[in-house]
Length: 251
Image (tube, rainbow, N blue to C red; front, top):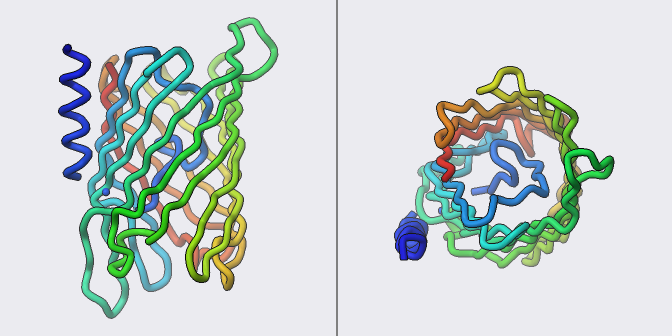
């Protein structure tokens, strides 16, 4: 009953709160490791990207992950999005809601040489107003494979997948990224990632970028997540600067 009540409250909050989603907070690259069985991860976050003439993203968002079964995680993001274009009035409102299921199908023991491997298919539901720059306007889907290996204080993970991106002028595209992270102190981990995306529109081009960030543990259950980065390829039209900041609760 307690779990059901918590789930009901969280889903009500999600429905009332929704920019571009980050895959594995605080980074765009994700990992195959799901939330533990019957445990929760809840993020309150803000994120965005600035390019020439426009800044957009999530003004305030909620992400909820739940360990529904061994190796299986349920996922939802609902952001209050914003868009500020040069020469136009700033916009804010419900953005595109994201739902997904993470499943780790290879889970090695501590002494095994092979990595964790999983998948994390996502759906972006066009609940935002695309005419106001608050959503994509079409149902999109991401079909990835993620790999992770730990070496003492070092963790490395990455992979990628295929985005199904329908709509006039759009095209399906690939995304890939890789991250290296180090446990600097018992309460602080820092990492950096590089990612690449093929063209997502008929007149668009490929983009490459990077970000640097980390996770600071206030306690066993409360954590600060942060990252910032920029594009390395066509930054003016893709990513002059990007950021992510969140408070995470785990229980």
